[in-house]
Length: 391
Image 1 (cartoon, helix red, strand yellow):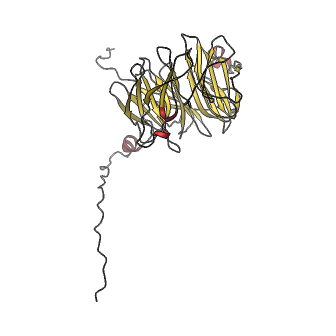
Image 2: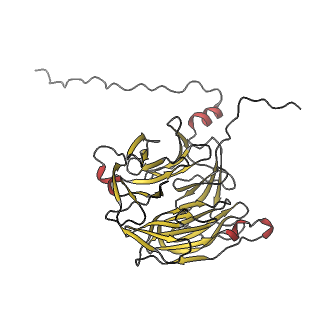
Image 3: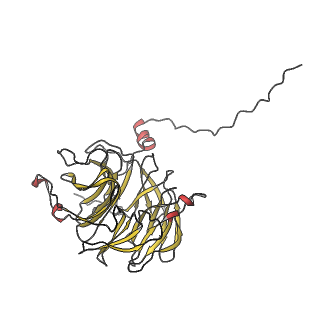
């Protein structure tokens, strides 16, 4: 009897791979088609200490969680880690440590208020709020030999152990508004030392907040639902708009970042799936533009002077990519991974904060065990339609 033979399966059809064409210039091939690094514009990276000084923001304390720019151009930020620090960046001295804020800091927020004054806060093992006047630090130059450090004014939050999730400034009201880890909305007048509780929210507040042109606050809560709050009222108003997410992920959907542009358009980035969207507060309409990258978690957004929206997308254990969104064409561009050799050689895996400088440069705060402050100068737009004068 003939042995039973198993039927022979035909080989599985494979998608054909089209390899690269013959490469004549290997450098150009790598630079243009293989390299993941940001190649448009210029990138500088600075260690988290003053030039030619011993670091006081140590390993495990240098992860940057928040950044802001003052009208005169100095950038200030908050670090997280074993200890959280307040710092400012100066082109003469690099990163200047203004002191320890707290222990076991997991997050923070900072906002420029009146002139060169800032208000900031942190959360974690404990929490706190502070005010700082940076006027005396801004004129410092190399002729001074040493950086200037103005004192930090500490303020009390309403609850013991309460921390700060987000902050925003309203120049019309002359007050800073914030969200706390106790799901409160708080306010601090420019000339006050006491924090006022505006409302106890009936929702878990996300660490994202902005002020709308009509004075209302806009934030988000669980499942990525957006809410508004008009100061002076006693409750937040939940909208019918939810941040976009994939099917079946509504229960873990979140808003990671919110941005109000100069022309009044609101943009946002989601956490779980990394969708980029706009929101019209007048109509309540939310428009999903899709994903700027295959990764999830749009961690930060800022508006450039070139009309583009700059953002960072980075999922847990991923590599942070800088991207842009052009509102005119409604298109994304993946700029790539930051990498620098000036003044140090470094490539960040993680970026936790962005802000725009007064000259249109983009500041990016690395959020890792050993972190750096990066400055990205976008490429200059080439002007056309004129000729250089002879001679």
